[in-house]
Amino acid sequence: MIQRVKLYVTGKVQGVYFRVYTKEEAKRLCLTGTVKNLEDNGVEIIAEGAKDKLNKLMEWTKKGSPNAKVENVSVKFCDATNEWQSFGIIK
Image 1 (tube, helix red, strand yellow):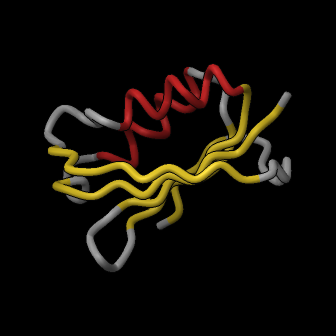
Image 2 (tube, rainbow, N blue to C red):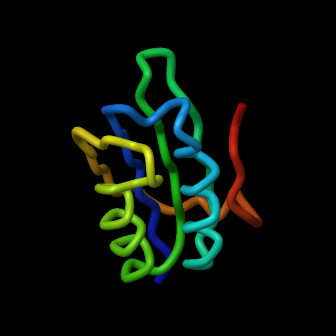
């Protein structure tokens, strides 16, 4: 069953290739969705896929890219919409 998760990540997550690494990890896990920087210096990730794969992405997000310093990850599960065919970065 496909599910959707919305993650809000804070800390040193901009300027450290966090979005690029997130995209690579999501693709590795066969997830679809988006990742984008927010004006408050946080990052928003919306991902859809199998629950076990979403759980793996959530675990990965707690550490993030090599130079990131993640302080907090908030998680919200929602209904899947199947609106994406792949995982992309929103500039």
